[in-house]
Length: 329
Image (cartoon, rainbow, N blue to C red):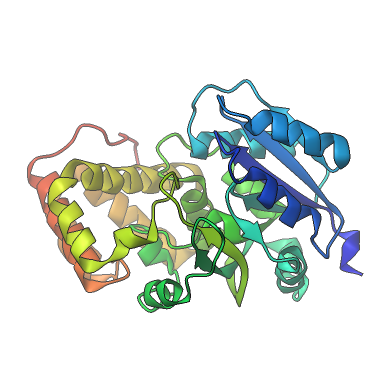
């Protein structure tokens, strides 16, 4: 019955010849068959495109929509794919990474959760699922999955202002949400962060608590390796990567400013009130921002992450960056 719904899957690639075939095979074997896979390559210099072209010849549901980009980065590559798909007919949208592996019921169960209530017609709606970490050979890393998920918290609007923990490869978007997320702003840290933030303040987020894919870990992961999440590694990176962490925070602030600029008239009242005050304090570079974040639960997943956030925020407040968007609220 659910095969009446057309799913568009967006896959952004870059030098993924080592793993791309496995991912494509897993998508082809989905139990839900009414899908189309759109692929945009960001200037690969390996055999990624030749592998994809072979699959395009084998399955008419797979097509390359762009192979002339030049290192725009993952976020804007996905942004271009969203632009393309919005001019086509579809019901729901999904994102795929080039190095993962989808279980055969990933689309089916995501879709079932999406259409279980009629609100998918009326509001921007986001479905996301669990996943399992796997090593380079797709052997599940159960202990690592349990360790990482033990610190995971359900995403709230307040938490999403400073941290996203919903991976794009686990998402399904309805058409209303797909239309709202375009264009993906250049200031966004990742396309999935932007999607989750918009869904949290304009619509609804639903968590499907089933692991429906293997999230492959290797040295070239765009989103990082799981071993980066140990306390010692985080503490080490805190001192060695201060500039990077500061840039991440500034990016999330820019993203919040862009969100308010675009959608202040549509955001739910209680969240709009928080966002307006948050953006005002950012622009004013006011020390009150620290207290405001603390009192409104604007924090990251763990205590150590939140402490790091506040320390970096203090640095930005007293030694301000000029990289923030200057918008009028």
